[in-house]
Structures are given as structure tokens and as C-alpha cells.
Length: 542
Image 1 (cartoon, rainbow, N blue to C red):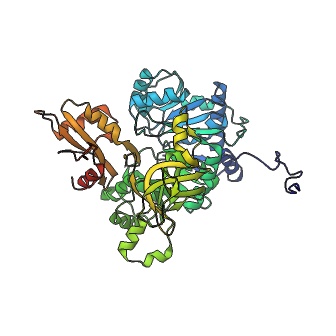
Image 2: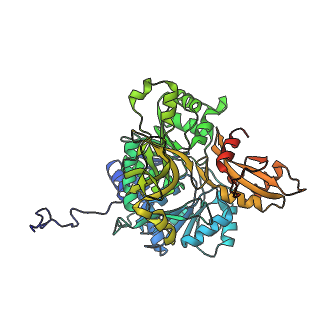
């Protein structure tokens, strides 16, 4: 057999092959546009050169405390400059960044700290009471760095004698960080909500994060120097990789500590925001703002929204308010967005009912995703592209996670048959667009956050008056979906709707508690299985 001439003397070497990673994007932005504003936070203005220097200082300080390859650095931070700095500094040391969800309760936070083996923790003083409780439960004893937001000071007690700004100042701005030895190396760790049992740790690699940066820019229409408003929590899938994406296009990050209507309108108008991302709750906050909170937006703002598509009236109101909407869909396991509803100009002239139907679809594969399909999960054969036959939505590509940390069984199950199984049930339309029809794991997506119906049911079952319960999603204009519980009481037991809601709020993170409790006989099959499809219909009018 003749040897392939395109392999003779054409080997990989340092000159023609480098691992893909987003870490070099900030270095380039700092080199090309050193004085351009990279971060706005209150009265703070941080240039790309300053951002890069601070990230290197933080990386140096972390390395000085022994942080390196294989270590986990956890952060409990809102959308602040420190969170952006951590996205670069932690992987610059070879360590893995673990962003904690600020809405979680103490036991789950403690579980994550232990499971991740957190060696160092950076925590905002707003969350000091929560973190103090979590650390009292956790077995791990990470080194703690307190972050005090000087623009928006918080009252929480310091949990250590190490202050973030002092810690950063102790580092070397010329720290010689290195790219990963292998692009398959882990860059970050994100936990799922957990549909049964404890949440799973989703591991991202440098290659996937780098490719997401280019895909994000293409999918959202970003060009040089966009102004990105941080309404999407950076703790959620690493902000869909936008903390790194904005450096790719030498853009400006506008930090938003709390998602409030006036703050959003002020930022959009004052800083000429071009892009933002979020769940339908962000839309509701903007549209339901009081007159004194509103400001006229005279330019178009690209709004990338995920979770369930909002009602047509909401989309129309957003358009009138100056926002251009792009619907995305994905999972924690796919670095955030894995599909987008690519809109065709020819659809603009279609009847309203047809346009509404098209807008409700999750769309086609993201630019960085290699394959998207809908399959029968048992036979692993593609379902007909008829828009009717239901199968499981599956993915293949470089923006699929490495796997679940310390959980080979769950990893093997997720990748069975050589595809990532999303757990979402949907259809494939004749034009190749997918549409979700149900969630096989009964996860409720409320305000962009996943809520396990099983977790809520478990809490309800612990109430002495509850004999049987089932929790499903109830459509909600503000939150997209909220938990709705159907409950059968034990004989002679009495309890009010308010009592059960308060019970759930005491035993769960508050956003997971049902907004509605319906006392009724729960529909079941002849074998006693709860018929949740009936409950979903009942919830619409509950």
C-alpha cells in the first residue's frame, strides 16, 4: 500500500499545533485593545489591559497557595468583576473552576464542596450566612477568600482573614501562565440540579469552551466591541461561556449584581448595551417595570433567551420595546446553548398562527455542535422527520461534556450508543428543526433554573398530612414554569395550601417550592402509576 503523501514529514509540532483554549483570548484583547473598557461595574471601569493584569495577579496568588493541576477552586459570586477574573485566573493555574449557584440551600452547597474536593473558596459577603452554614456541614475545609464588593458593599461577616483585593494585590501581574498541555484538560465544573439523588458534576474541557466562544459570536451576531449586559448568571454553565466569548470580540462586560428593572434599563441606555441573555423572567422584569423605572431604548438590543419560549404577546412586547429575540436550547452538559431557532426572513410574511408555531421550536444545531438528532432511545434509530413521531433529543460534538465527575455509571448511561442522551423528548420537523414535546425526567425549568419534581415530591411526602402527591410544571408568564403540586390527604387529615407551600419553603431552596397546591384525587393507571400527562393539562387551569 502506498504511504499517504500528506502524512510524510507533516507531523504536529509547536509551530503548527496548539491546544484549543479560551485562555489566550484575554491576552489578545489586552494586546490589541489595551485601553478599551473590558468591565463596567457601578463606577468602576476596567480596561482589557487591567483585566488581564488582575487575572494574572489572581492566578499568581492562587499558585502561591499551592493551587495547580487537578485542584478545584469554588466560587460563590454574583455577576461581578471577581467572577470574570476567576474564569481566567483559575484555569491559568491548571486548576478547575467550580461556580456555585447562589440560589442553592446549604446542604446542596456542602455536598458540592465535598464532591468537588474544593481546595479554595472565594465567597461574596452577601452569601456569608449561607456559606457559614454550608461549611459547618461540609467535610472539606477549603482556604477561604472573602470578596467585598466595594461598589455595592454587603453586611455579611467575613469568613476568613483573607480579603479578595488584598489577595489579588499579592500576586504578580507578570505571572507566566501556560496554556493547557492537552485541550481535553478540564476547565470548569458545573452541577446539574439532580433529578434523583444528589446533583451530578458536569466537567467541561478547554476545547469545548474555546469552540463555544466562536459559536456564541456567530449565533448571536456579535462583531467587534459588543457591550454585553450580564443578566444571565455566570454560575449557570459558566454564563454559556460568554465570560470568555466577550474577550474574543474585545467587548465590554457590564456587570449586574442583581437583575432589577431600573438597573437594566439604566445600563442598556447609559452604556448602549448591544447584547444580553436570559430566561423569560428577565423579559417579564423588563416589561413589568414601573413607569419610573423605565427608559426609552432607541437602539436594537439582541436578547438571547433560553428555557421555554415565552408567549407570543410577550415576544411582541419585547420587539416593540427594542429587543431582537433569538431562542436557544441546551443543557448543562452541552456548555449551555446547543441549538438555536434560526429565523428565515421568508417566514416574516406567514400568517400569525404559523409564525407562532415556528417560534416555538428549539431549532437547529449550534455552530459548534457536530450532530443533532431525535432517536428512539431503545433501538437507537432516528425517528421520521414528520414533526409528530416523538423520540429523545440527542447530541454529538465537541461541546458535549467530558462526563460526570466521579460518576462513571452515569457517564456511561448518558453516552450510551455513542450519543449524549438529553432526557428531553421531542420531534424532528421535515426542515430539520427540532421541537421539545416533553421532559422525560420531569424537570421543571423556572426562571432558567432546573427544579426536580421528584425532589419537591419527596419533601411533600414528609408532611404528616400528605398521602399521595405529584408535582408537574404549571405555565407561568413571568417564570416560564413553576411547580404545581397535586395532593391527596390522609384520612381525617387537614392542612391548607399555604401550610404546604410554607412547609416546602422550609425544606427546599425557596424557588423550588410550589406556587400552587391542588387538593384532589391524583389520576393513576390501573397499575397505580401517576398519570402526569393528565396533571399537566389540569395544571394549566389550576
